[in-house]
Image (tube, rainbow, N blue to C red; front, side):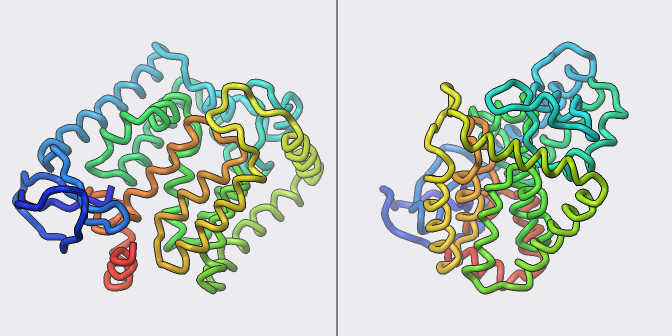
Length: 327
């Protein structure tokens, strides 16, 4: 992350900063990000491309295995598929398997997935998560997939990769923050980025879109929102699972997220938004760290050929590059 492709130089060590340069097709990979300092890696663009293509094939093989019924590991995806959108909380309780904690709006919006056979849905869901991972990481997809949180999140079928994608999208389309607020809720603390930057227009779009979706859902089935609220309150009082990676309650992690966002907003470091949102997850499972792949397209001097990076820069190239230089 924060890489450029530059020819080998006589410089050694981790100190010093140099301007990024465009080098040969197969030049070694380095980083010029001032936060990370300069680190030479024994990887070349050609190697990364081959690794990326191999990772894509591996993910497609996983999808085909799901489609043929050879695997049964998408436990979180199975929860999304089996939940009854008209009554999603009947069997949900803190600390129980396959409990459904997302808002009624999300359950209602995803109702069409129940028309698909399970094997078709989990295969399509795996392809969607693969596309989200590829969009955010580009050439670094294979390296990201080797990280345990990312691999686990893809195999169990949770939404953390999609949450990361929604954060990146939110810099141009603020309404995508509704996805975070109507699912995991607390990662929505990332909206403070707009507050600290006094970007009231984008904040209003994000909150307005969320409120509109929630209002429509409430008018359709108000009783579900009362059930969901009671369930979320009960979850805050439940004991932590013993096998959590980090058992620090979210109420202690939230101030850290806010402080990180304030620093990032004041210094124009976009990559602090997915990091702060990840820290603020209501329950910090191992695979929750998969959200951090959203950092890749937001770091300065990144030449990972991530489609998300190119998409962000395409709207306001000069502003985006100036923001990147500050990172």
